[in-house]
Amino acid sequence: MENTSNIPLPPFDLGAKFSNFTRVVGSKVPIAQTPKELVWTLNKAKLYRYVPVVPAEKRHPVPLLMVFALMNRPYILDLRPGHSFVEFMVKHGYDLYLLDWGTPGPEDKNLKFDDYALDYMPRAIRKMKTISGSDEFSLLGWCIGAILTTLYAALRGDDGLRNLILLTAPLDYSDKKAITFARWVDERYFDVDKVLAAFGNMPGEMIDYGAKALKPVENYVGNYLKLWDNIENPHVVESWQAMNTWVSDNVPLAGGAFRQLVVDLYRNDRLMRGEWMIRGERANLSRIKANLLTVIAEGDHITPPCQSAGIMAKVSSKDKELFRTPGGHIGIMAGSGADKRTWPHIQNWLATRSK
Amino acid sequence: MSDKQAANGKEFDPTETFREMRDTYMDAWAKGMVETVNSDAYAKASGMMLNACLTTSSPFREVLEKVMLQALQQCSMPSRADVISLAERTINIELRLDDMDAKLDRIEKLLTQPSASDAKRNRTAKTRGSKKKGVK
Image 1 (cartoon, one colour):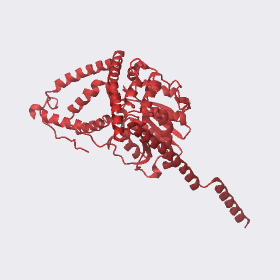
Image 2: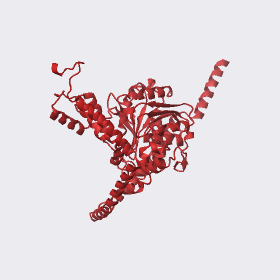
Image 3: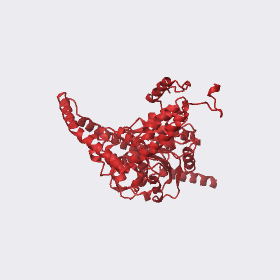
Image 4: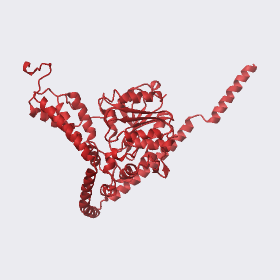
């Protein structure tokens, strides 16, 4: 890792401070350091198993599969040593797997949620079951990954799914006024077919712009001011660099999935209304029977809390919990308070249900 | 150092006041911008800009694609469509291989696990053995 523990600067040495600042902004740091092995691949998707550090007899017998969003890198779950959800869960004795969707190419422009939920996920889960030797498993989905895990639970929930954890899950699109993205992709203003005809897949840079434009001052100015103010604090600089490395590593979203996201979800709210057809099969949320933990970030501007709460009333799960925690869309899992609030809560909830 | 010490023991920072003013201004600016981007007017304006950009670039993109296709054909090189088609076929092969892998796993599981009839046979043999011992 690049040494960012800067020598304290004299208060008015602006030149040196600026030089240090530009160096930090322009550099990337190694992330995703927890040891893992590649156990399965299909097209661009990869399934990783994290190397256990707890002896087999002390590990939880039910493995956990983490599914992240399609348009961001999943290593946000394993950001940096000492501040990594993956590291935390491995140390607590979980047999942990990560499904990395990879970067879609032009040949993947027709990939849809149908393909991810019914081709890729079942295959990856089969492999995980074979390796772990367990017929039951837990799923953790974050952001768009939570849509995928919800779809899987609704369509293939009888396949051994015991626990379902949804983090900042954008499932409910009924309150259009509360969702800025819904306003932007309104059919009066946004021609999804024209965009996809031009690009094939939705470019990562455009998605990144969309996410940042929700809070433009914080993202384009405040973020850098925070670094400038704390350039002499190695802890702040280290975490800023790790987060900046992740934020600037954008992935395009497959065209077919983007069209579904806009038309089926943002515009027509088909999942919550029970009208979303996935390969001719209706995604019926009442078919979800797994133990359910829904985590809501109270300060989430990308997935406002109203998008995640509605599922609680739709599922048939007898054991379900809605956990609200302060923080933003990413901050609840990767922010400085994550290891004190969100991670222990998820771990404690899962531990009692993974025996 | 003494001139840098304020009464409360903190280091004197001449830029503190400036920073406070800046943060106050930033907060107000941020709130204003969030309201702006969350309006129909912004959605309409950004949609129009994107549309105009795509409409303007579309003819150039089409010409470029045609020229590139011709150039690749002249050089006996595969086109973008050819490469995509090849990639799609590879993915299909991967899917078939994964299906085979799943079948092999099932077969292996069946072979390594004792079958139900084996287990029954073992149980019967054990029962017979214990009965014989009982007779003796």
